[in-house]
Structure formats: structure tokens, C-alpha cells
Image (tube, rainbow, N blue to C red; front, top):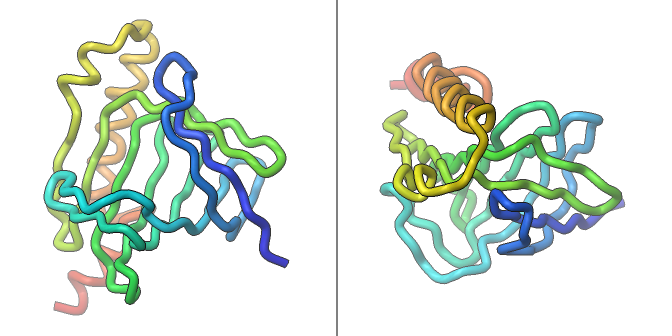
Length: 162
């Protein structure tokens, strides 16, 4: 039986800025993975072109300071990853709450990556602990990309295929 879930994207103050629904694919005590469709007009985020109808496989963690979206087009062709640096997600029955800390990492299929929204991040009123955790998280995500591991393991297989 398919179960829908509502994702609540919150700003750093915990205020909702975007809400949408998806279909739960996996729910564990520390991770929720869902499928959702992009519902906005075409935008370019660091070389990753997002278009209405793109399929996002989104993974949220209650024990990590990020989430990762695996993005494909409507036909299932892989486009890349979009990673948000966030406070650990909160899971409630039928809901995921993620407090976005502005820093984003885009990773393209060839493994190139780009950090986005550094100026916005710098302007946020965050505690020293939150800033330290966000910086460490971004560094960890970048290391996973370089190592082609974790959510970016597909890069390892692609390099073996070429």
C-alpha cells in the first residue's frame, strides 16, 4: 500500500517556506526516502536544470545535517543530485520537517560539484554550533562526492563504465 507524506521545508527559524507531497519508499527510525515531482517552473541551480515533472528521490535523516535529492527527468534519465545542509529532520506520522540552513551542494553526473547560496548562509543568524555543524556537513558531503561513496556511489560505477 502506497503512503503519501507531506514535506515541510522550513527556514532556519523553523518557519514553513514550502510544502509538497511525495510517496514514501522507505521509513526507518533515522531515515525517510520518498519520491516526489518537481512542481515549479524551470530553473538552473548550479548547472542542474530542474523542470516541472522531474522526479526527485529524496532522503531525509534525523541523525545527519543534510538531505539528498537524486534528480531524474520525466523519462527517468539521471540529472544529478541536489543536497541541502539542514538541521536533522523531524519525522512525524505522514510528515517530514527539514530546517534549511541555505547552503546547498549540487553534484552533476560527471562528479563536478558546486556550492550554492554561501552569501545567504553567511547572512543567517545561526549559533556558533550550528555554523560549525553546517561547515563540517558541507565538507563531509564534498568528501563523499570525491570518494564516490554514500549517496554518490553511482559515480563510482559510471567511472568504471567509461
